[in-house]
Image (cartoon, rainbow, N blue to C red; front, side):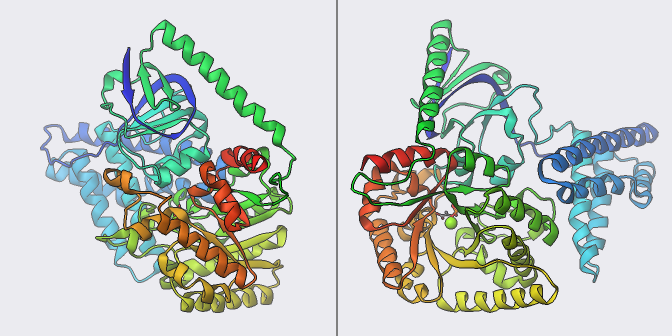
Length: 538
Ligand code: PEP
Ligand code: MG
């Protein structure tokens, strides 16, 4: 039996087999081969395997998020049959007597460059596809595992660290718990783990040894531990803890249907944060009265290319309709920093958290922004929908956004689309927005405070950097004063103010927020009922 310590991101218990998730990168080497024909056969076999993977991905994506998102994998299968591509690789293997990995990489890069230099935007975008299929074939040739979870039963994922896009692409039904060696409590991966209600540990002192793969383990994030090969007594105790935890969760169900009201009659809206259409089920199950933050960028992160207006419309419509008339606040694209999608081709930045991200990308890339706004406005005809904009720092930004919104609405109406009444709000997650909240409140209908970034920018502490975790203090008086100032300025101007950062679910602050006059708290679906319980005890 081996015991490792970590830091809990979401408390709970899981018992199951370990799945070691390693990021493997292939380092290209040029080798001379004696038998070029055998190498050509190896290349063809790899292509067949890559096509089989793509076929599976197509089926899975079609089932989980719809045909629109899936077609890209069908297109990739066809690209692997493209004669120009295939014959160029075969010729290189035969003429230069090189290994298939080398021929595929060099040919793929050269095709991708040709596409990237084309005038037409459609062909330019195909460059990323060529690189994608090339990487897939090379990975097959080099024996590198796919990013997915290759197991028939649900497992405990043990990894160095996970990016948000790796996490969203995992098959959630196969995960019992997350354990990472690195990571920070306020990273988006931690937020995703919370929203999946999976016991999770970060900063765990385990090494990623292959010998742990498949071993039975217990994650007890109440006690910040991972136990590998538990002895009989430990396993028995863990089974009892697991049962107790499940019982506690189901006892919360008694709060379903009750109001979020204090004993002295003060009310607060408790909404939920989501990242995908599938999360709506959890929101309804936990009886949240609305969605206070739909992180729409996850729709982009799950996609291999810019999601079309139609694909986005379907996703937003499914959420809005699924909520059956309850409010849904869709936050526009907040990509950048730790949330990266390759097809955006964002330049490397020294300080990505302070770089081209969120609303800044939208204001720079008007087509991307307008496509998203069109999709949201079209979805607004199917329920109660609000929009909020992330990372605002100035009044001019919101004035510019409102101009664009007007153009989009006029275009949609002229095209005969139905649109609903949409409330417009902003996230308050920069100190500048707090200081300007009196002026900003005159431009919008609500504020939602993003305490994750507000803490990061107020304290000058990178939320991703685990080395300075102990300085990342969302309870810092500077942060609390900023929250109070935002609420006061919002109310002075007649608009409502909520919190959608992780601090909203910090039960030690619920009473403080109620005293400050908060109107709404938006939390992971998992926290809705514990928060309701807390409010009702105040
Ligand atoms: C926040 O910053 O508090 C927030 C809710 O946005 P995100 O965590 O997605 O940056
Ligand atoms: Mg934020």
